[in-house]
Image 1 (cartoon, helix red, strand yellow):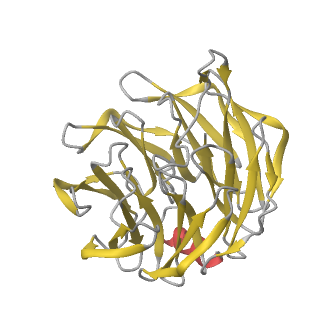
Image 2: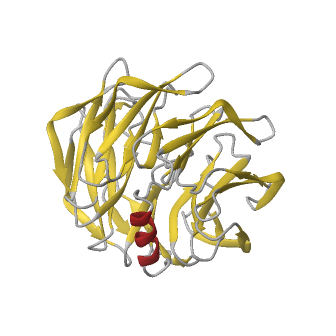
Length: 367
């Protein structure tokens, strides 16, 4: 994982990996809402702290503010780089970059994580986030040093089990995996090759390359996300200070939009809100979050205020499922910055601008 950290520094961005979390079956975000019985439903946030081998855990208030749980953190493997939740919210998975494993957790009724009886599973070298398909039955991890994607099934107990074959080829520098909301297609960005590889997801969850499988980007292919309806794909280009934008075809293929890129800072993570109207990009050295609206054709248009200040070296940005709040992780100030999303999609800091995390927070997941 140290190689990945160095790569991210050289690329002037840090890690978002997902899909994003989000939007593809692992809980893109969370806020307090109403359950079917009319009672308030509390949602939770989890932060991967790379430097102290822990996950910080919080309740999300009705105002979007994060409050540490009674047990504010849990230990993980070495160098956690991400945390993902399966769709029901019963299980969580932490990818550990230094020891190339995935730790498995059970989510309690209070939102607290406890280690599962299912043991850690191995990945390739320099793994990124575990991306889940919308059914919660399959998971995929990009392995940067190996240039591969590890693929897993998930059984009824939440246990990860390697598929046959356990890995498929990508390219060296494989950085992130996203899965289309349909569950039919997956995409892998390859930093060194400046490409996106396109895969079909088979009946068993295994990946196979699509015809015309490789899309050439620029010098660097960073992190990706897909809009909630699976119509548009966005990719950060750290060396170009841009975001590439694509239309997703009915057979899963990517086609550049008429305006193929838009300007940003030095981009890392990209998040699209649940309505598909707004997008946000963390800019690592610029210490900002760029904010955009999406046109009818999916093209990103900068807001009248194109960027807002954020945490020092923001490594990740996420939108909660209500589409009301945004969170950004500050890798070097050990804080999570909190924002409200206005009616026009622009961000404003919450009254409590930030909350403390562990050491080296680089990823946040909410459910």
